[in-house]
Image (tube, one colour):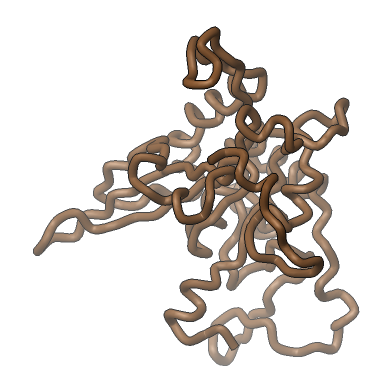
Amino acid sequence: MLRHSSQRTVPEGIFSDIYEGNIWRTFCIDSSNPSPFFDEEMLDTHIGLALNVDWFQPFEYTTHSTGAIYGVVCNLPRECRFKPENILTLGVMPGPNEPKQGQINNFLAPIVDQLEEFRQGVYLPATYEYPKGRKIYLALILSANDIPAARKICGHAGPGVKCHRCPKHATYDPITKRNHYGGFEDVEEWFQPADIGSYREAATRWLDCQTQGERERQFLETGVRWSELYHLDYFNPVTFIVVDSMHCLFLSVGK
């Protein structure tokens, strides 16, 4: 099943799955080795992981927010990816409240450590097709969450503060006392791709701040906090976040 994408036939210009995307086609886990990570000959040993984070209420009659961090193997066919036996449970955040932006790094750190091990390859002693064992590589290529969770785990400010894909900041309205993105006088500054290098620099500066006050000032200026995911130098916290279309449709805010 991991190799199924190499047998698919999709008309040119049609995007029916992750395999038609640029990231899947061009992703390299090592900048010194530009060969594609998802080569057709290595689809059963080079695994693309989607990270999902969400919270739920496990109890009735009381407010208690528990979080789950789980991984989905993108190599698998879409009809098999989310079956319980194929889900990788990476972590549980017991609650009773959601961790704040900086606190979630405590849960991400051991996951990132394991991802670093898989970057070098983890040896499986025996598989069905390879009784003598095989080396497996795994890379985090996708963060698929609702907008608050995606921004929290990737170190971005909320959508009411700054766009994470371009340099645009929201404008504060003293009358309504709310931030907004109205006014297109500076439209030429909109929709410019964010520089991932500047994101990483801003995140590192936030981490190096000595006091909480310094971190808050740094965050208000840049809209970026440190995330443990930044230890993965191949992970792009801007382009690896997908649009939360499901909630947009559910809340009727797709427009």
